[in-house]
Image (tube, rainbow, N blue to C red; front, side, top):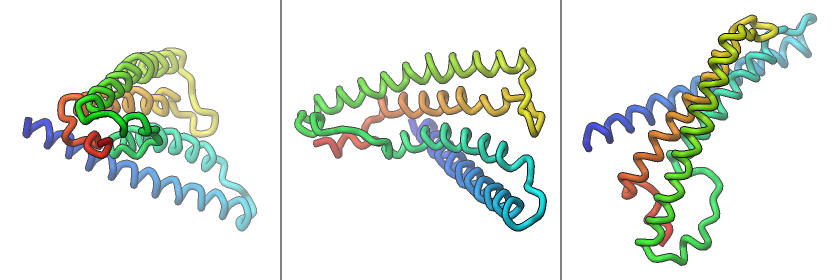
Length: 165
């Protein structure tokens, strides 16, 4: 159990640092886009596409990290009226739904999208890189959602269930 907790802490650390790095690169990229568009005579051609791809990765991985931190919008009016035992059941049920969604839609569907774009050789228009690299964020975020969901189901004391009382 201790090894699982260490693995989750390491995942949290790596994910938070990766998200911060992506955000820094995104800010620099958009700043460069503004500078080249309004100050320099020739606008940069690649910055819009880079910003779009970074935003995709930031959104998907950030959503998984927000799930870990319980920072997603939620309605807990009914759960607050339940007993601690029933609130825990509802919490585990919700985590199970997130896990199912992660496997079916994000991991399976996202992996199929990555495979399809790789096989078809779809390239980004400006950077001319495989779009599969961009779409890898979908199954990767699904895997992270799944890991966090399973950890919440089996170790709910680390979650915000206690706040629902």
